[in-house]
Image 1: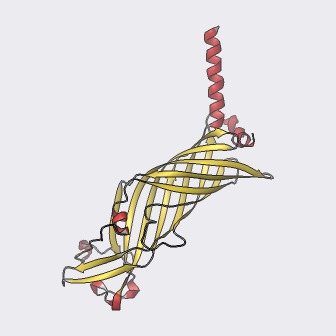
Image 2: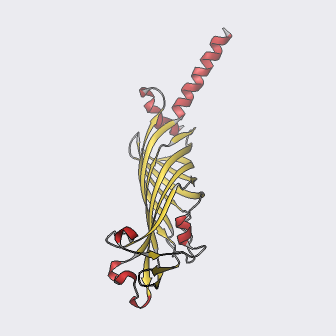
Length: 253
């Protein structure tokens, strides 16, 4: 009899947990306003001429894919979000006296580009509330970003990559401590974020959030520095299909 009671308690506990544990799928896109970059020297090895470019601004685009796990009681929820972050950042260069490398012109818009791939693990807190029948959530948290690939290159507005394979022979050493050094080797870092969620339906959630990364670390701070993102999540409870009603009900407790 004792064993039966223990088994029943375990089943009840698992059932309660399954109603409170929500899994899902998440995709998002962000645009980043980066801080002003640094000067960088480009040396054309074919004619032994150096050119100094100044990065007066920077921007970034990121794409995220993740699998959130949401757990909590009532209106208070915690989300564990493993995800993959693909980031592409650009710093357009301005050259003095139209002294532009490779015989190009200012209209070519030469820029330093970075491509960074970062698996990440996020921990976020959300407070759920209602305005009539409308369901919202306010959140804050951090993402631990772990770069596994980063690459700097010189490109232009036509997406031409200035590489030896394309006939361009040059060096582009970046200054120690510059934003280019950070982009080339971001290192493991913490990214804080705040967000606002709108529940479009029982299962679909529209996510709006703001976050910062190590790319927001230039010597001339921008007022708009940071990344603004929008995404959508599809959330499902663990357990039976008829438990889906819990997805809305548990947040009203």
